[in-house]
Amino acid sequence: MLRLSKKTDYALLALRHLALAGSTGQTVPARELSETYDLPPELLAKVLQRLVRGGLLVSQQGIRGGYELAKPADQITVADVVTVVDGATKITACTDEGHDCDQFSKCAIRDPLWKLKDRIVSALEATTVAELASQVPPATDVFPVTLHR
Image (cartoon, rainbow, N blue to C red; front, side, top):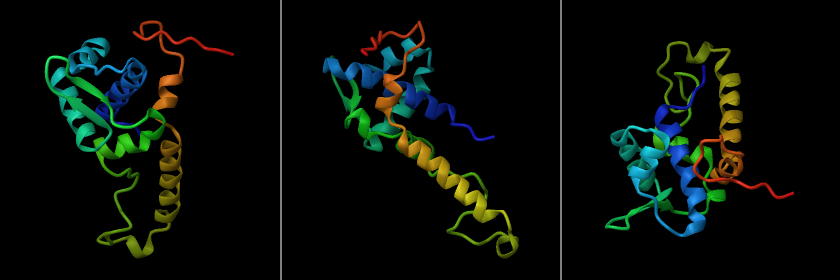
């Protein structure tokens, strides 16, 4: 089964929260993210550090420190997040870079599965953090969203 890692889940929660908070112009402390979503602080800190190193977040030190998006939410895709947190998306053990599999030359499913992976990556690339932030949140969310029609 294909599944996003827990680290990617945490990263997407944090980025969504920061996208919603971004309109206030304030940074959000890691503690607020951890407490709001009941995330383990140590693991969340590691995820946030990866997002900073990957250029998706900016961190501010000091008393008013915290995190903010490094670029607009509509320019950060789910694929960007997955790649920064977990590395390249794979659905098979073989890759197009190394041909060390004994079955590589005889494999009849490799190419169709690679095409499937490309479709999955395209869907992840087409979904932005802004899109995630625009979805109607659960009732317990801290940022109410008003839909204008």
